[in-house]
Length: 434
Ligand SMILES: NC(=O)c1ccc[n+]([C@@H]2O[C@H](COP(=O)([O-])OP(=O)(O)OC[C@H]3O[C@@H](n4cnc5c(N)ncnc54)[C@H](OP(=O)(O)O)[C@@H]3O)[C@@H](O)[C@H]2O)c1
Image (tube, rainbow, N blue to C red; front, side, top):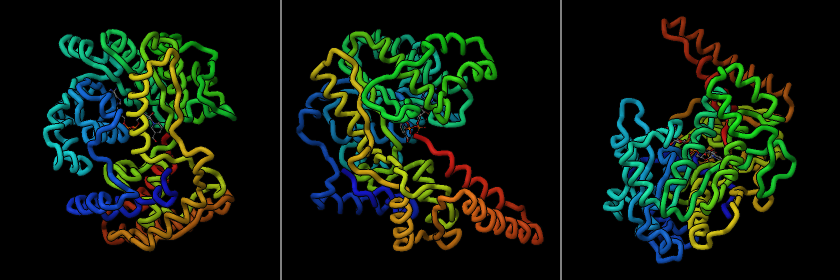
């Protein structure tokens, strides 16, 4: 179980870390038995993955990267890891993979076991395309060799258009299932969902709840309906869910349940995935969404208020806990081969509940003890449970100072940017993902 103040570590790490500090941090952690950073070990899980081929979608994402790093470092006997990659920003899949491995978070793998990296093979594809857009050769190679699948690819944006959310989260899962069915030696398929796919229910257990429409009907409709019409169909199905992200993840779960057939399958539902507690580097995070965005902006002094009830739980789970769970679930499926599909929640729940009030206190205390080098303003502020007080604080502490600064910039013949900046900070922090 992670310590609650660890959730605020990115306040320290993200703002201060330099590449040459990484080795020092890792070495310190290794000598500290309570925070031992996992190195290759002889374990039943390591044994299970030995000589197996793994297929990962979403390996360039926040969770996928940590999963890939952990597999390379702790399951060193793996034969091959195939990662599905699409070309992006003029980079081919191979170039994207090279860029990925040049990241600081892969330092330990590069130092300790550089040959492991050569066992990762990029396969060009896109989950929105039939057969994941794989070439005939890649499809054949995967179908003959893959033993464990981790399906992490998704769009996690709350404001994605319906068509795109359906395409990536639902159709993408359908295409993955079709490819999985062609695999001749598949021992485990782990589908990553979210703890909030059925957040419109008051109690959520390890089960899938029925929806009034079959996911295949949604897929059929999305083929010919335009965005507006699809929205008309899907909006009533939200049934209290905050966004089409949650809805499409719920439908994807139903699809997995319907179609996984004889494949040993599990759905893992993380809550809000936050910075690493220990691995690959304590505090490592590469996005600024949700609580991480609040921590970053508050420590920089860019954010001074939020409309939050301090006693409400913010269910965070460090990304390394989730990736460890995925690997363990893969092992469990492959060794026990359960008859029915399994569902796991990866969350703090009632065992280690963190409230927004506790997060606020941990963040500000860390920000004052380890102030970032480049501050926007002195860190400070507070959550407001009153909407009115929050609006007032937004006007006085965000918009008004930004307008004064923009006026000053205009008078000096510079481009006004502070109102835009303040708006961006607020939009970013208030668009959480999970
Ligand atoms: N982050 C959280 O707090 C959280 C909480 C609960 C559950 N989850 C679940 O965890 C999983 C991973 O989330 P994340 O936070 O790692 O998301 P992320 O950082 O946004 O990564 C998304 C990944 O999906 C890939 N992807 C998106 N569209 C694709 C497409 N059309 N074809 C192929 N790959 C595509 C992205 O590839 P590109 O690099 O090419 O864009 C990226 O690797 C998701 O299933 C999400 O629902 C996340």
